[in-house]
Length: 75
Image (cartoon, rainbow, N blue to C red; front, side, top):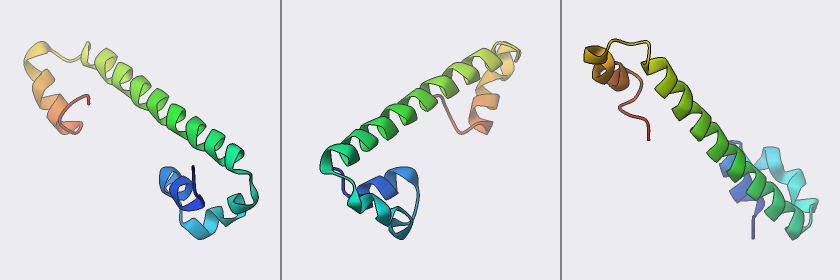
């Protein structure tokens, strides 16, 4: 079950900002939670692809340093 608190956390919002979702059915909240999860996974995959493609323009000896500057890796 997706509670309003869980949805708020997944969206990075305060629970009060999502309080209106309490009126939605359990099925609708679960569906929304699934959509948020899929969107996050899609975003992460797209970001990894973009970083990999961008690294193709960085000379090989510098790629490790650039990865560190970008947060230490590609996840």
